[in-house]
Image (tube, rainbow, N blue to C red; front, top):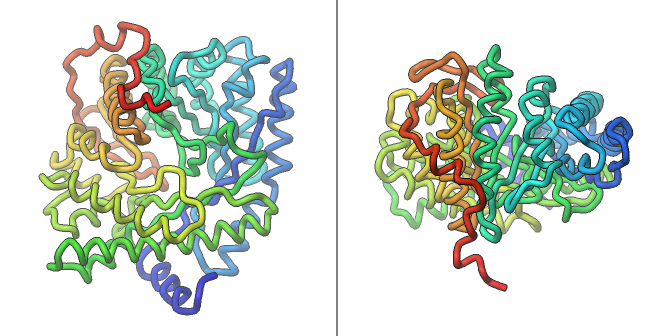
Length: 454
C-alpha cells in the first residue's frame, strides 16, 4: 500500500512533472474463437472482446477520479490473429474481415487502441501467417485503431529473412494505402525480434499464447519526473546521479502498481505485469531526450549519448523492479523520435541520425521507433534496416523493433504529422546504398552460438 508520504510525492509528480499512467491494457485470449468459417470467427471475436472488456474504460476512469492519477490510454491486446484465423481464413481478405471485427469491438467498448493483428514468424511463415502479413496494407488502411506486429526473429531461432524481405514491400504498400494521411498506417505496425508476450504498449502489443484467458497489464511513463529529479544532480558524480534515477523510477512504478492492483480487483481480472518504460510525449518537459541532456549532453545524439542511455535504462530498471511484484513488457527508456520533443529537435538539425539511433537501440528497450524516412526509400532498404535491428536483438538477447514510416510524397527536411501522442517527425535521410542482393537471398539467418543453452 502507498503511505501518506508517497501520496504527497505522487500528487507533486502528477501536478508539476507530467507523471501519468500511460496505459491500462487488458489482454484477452481469442484461442477459443477459432471456428471453421471466417464469419463465425468474426462473430466470436467481437462477442468475446465486448463481453470481457465492457467495463475496462469505466473502471479506468473511476480509478482516475478516485486517486487523481491520469490514465492516458485504455487498450486491449488479443491473441495473434494469425493463430485465431489459421483454420478459417483462405485469403488475405478473410483476415481483413477479422481486422474489421477487432476495430468494431474496440470501438464498442471505448478503448483507444487494440493490438494483436499479429504473426509470430521467427523461424518461418505458415500459409496463414503469410496471408495475414499480405493483408496488412488493406487491414491497416480500412481500420482506425487496430495495431499490428510481426515477430521476425529471436535469439533461439535466428531471423526469418523471407518475412523480413516481404515486410519491406508490405511497409511500402501500407505507406501508399494511407498516403493521404502522411502514411499513418505505418504508425500502427512494428516488426520485432524477441517480442515479449506481455507488452501493453502499441503498436507491438499482443496477448501471448502462454497467458491466461484475460489479464491486466499497466504501462507507466514519467520522463518529466526523472528530468525534474535530475535538477538536483547537476554537477554531482555518477553515483549520486544513478541513485537519483533509481529512487525516482521506484516512485513512478509504485503508482503503476497501485493502478494495476486496483484495476485487477475491480474488474476481477488477474494482474499481469507493470511495464516501467519511460515513454515520452511531444509535450515540452516530457522528453527522454531532455533527460539525456540533463545527464550532460549538449544535445541528444552527441558523443556519449549511447553511454548515457545505457546508464539511464539500467537505473530505471533497477529502481522499478523493486516497486512491483511483476515487471515485464519492454521496461526501459523509449526513444520514439516523433513522440519526443528534444529528439525531434535533434533529428531536425542533424545531430541525431538513423545510424546513431541504431547504436542507441543496443542499450534501450525498444528499437528504431517512429522514424519518418523519405517515401522513395526502397523496399530492400527498409528490409535491410529491419534485418540490422533484428540482428542487434538476436545477438544481444533483448527485444528490438522497427516502426518506420516511409512517408509517401515527402523527402528529407519535410515534416510528417501524426497527431496526439504519436506527434510529428522530420523526414530524416537513410543510406540508400543497395542491400537487395542480401535481403533477397531467402531462408533464415541462424541463431547465434550463445543461443544454444539446452
